[in-house]
Length: 441
Ligand SMILES: Cc1ncc(COP(=O)(O)O)c(C=O)c1O
Image 1 (cartoon, helix red, strand yellow):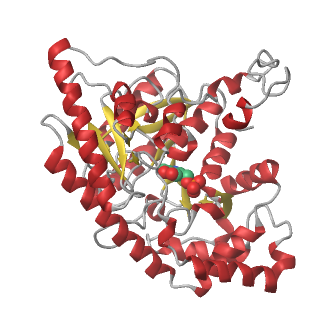
Image 2 (image 1 turned 120 degrees about the horizontal axis):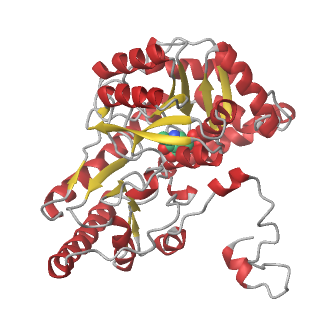
Image 3 (image 1 turned 180 degrees about the vertical axis):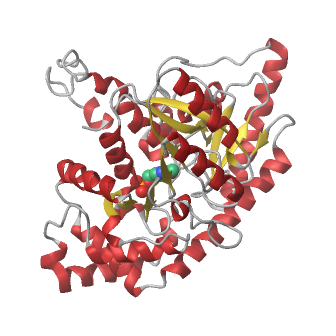
C-alpha cells in the first residue's frame, strides 16, 4: 500500500502502522531499513524542485515510437514464446548478443557463461546470496553504490571500505586492507568495484591500476566483482578495457541495459567463471523461476534491428552536454572551499563541502530552496560521508542543471555564513541507516 492510500484507511487492521510481526522477522531483515530522508525525496520529486538526486537515465531520448512498434511486432509475431516462461539462464540468442556488447570492452566470452538477470541489481543480489554468510567481509570502494550496500547489508555482510582517489580504487590501500583483514582472521569473500564513472564518485579506475588490482586480488584469493553499468557511456574516446578481459577466472562481471537502452525492461547480466555460473543459475531459479521472456526478446530485438551503437553514442553526447553544464556552473558559482570530481562519463559528480558543513543538514534547506541532491552518508556502510554529496547530471536538461546548481550554491553560501557565525551546522537525525530510496540509486 502506498503512503497516500494508507492515509485514507480507518479500519484498525488495514493501514495500521503497528507491526504485529516485529519479533518474528529473520535477523537479516534488520539490515533492510528505509531511509530517514525518504520523506524529503517525496517533496523533492515535485516539479518545482530541480532534482540533482536521481540516477535515472533520460529515456525520453529513445526513439519511443520505434520501441513501441518493436514491442507490438514482438507480441504479434512471437507472442507464444515472448509470453511464455523462459529458462533460468536466459535467452540463448540474447546471451550471444550480450557477448557482442562486452567485446567493446575487450571481453571474449562464451554465451554459456552469461546469466541474464533482472537488471544488474539482481545479479548483485545473487552473487551476494551465493557467497556471503553473515559476518563475511566484502571490500568496496568508499564511497560505493547505495543499491549494492543495501544488498550486502540485507545478507549481513560486513562491508569494509577501501580508499580511492581521482584515479579510482587505490591499489596500496587495497593491499593494506587485505593484510589487515588477514591479521584479524576475517574472511574476505569478494571485492566489489565499479571501475568506470563510478557511482557515486564519478571517477574511473586508471588503466595502469587495473592489472595491479587483479594481481593483488589473485595473490590473496579474493574474487573481484566488477560492476560496469556505465562503461559504454564515456565522453572521450573508446570504452576502457574491462578487468574481466584480463582475468576470466578471477572476475565476475556485471552488465546492464538500463543505462544504454532502458531500465524499464530490467535486463542485466552476470558473466562468471563456469562453476560460479552454475550456482548463479540455481540461485536465479530459486529467486524468480525464470526471467521475463518478453523483456529479453524485446531487448534482443532492439539490438538486432536498431543501430544500438548509434543510440549509445547519442546518449553519450546528451550526457556530456549535461556534465559540461554541471561542471561549468559549479566552477562559476560554488563558494570557495567546495571541491568536486570531473567525471569523464556516466551520471555523477561527487562534491566535498567546506570543513564543518554537513550535507544531510543541508538537504532540508536545499529542498526548501527547490533543489535536491543525495547526502554522502548513504554511500558508505559506516558513518562516513557527511561532508560529501552526490549530484546527478543525467536527468534534468542543461538549463535546469544550471539553475539547480545556482540554488545549491546559494544554500551552501548561506550555510557557510551560519557556520562562521555559530560555528556549526545543525544536523538532522544523525542516527539510523542512510540508504536512500531505490528511485534515487
Ligand atoms: C553501479 C550500479 N550498479 C548497478 C545498478 C543497477 O542497475 P540495474 O539493476 O538497473 O541494471 C546501478 C543503478 O543505478 C548502478 O549505478
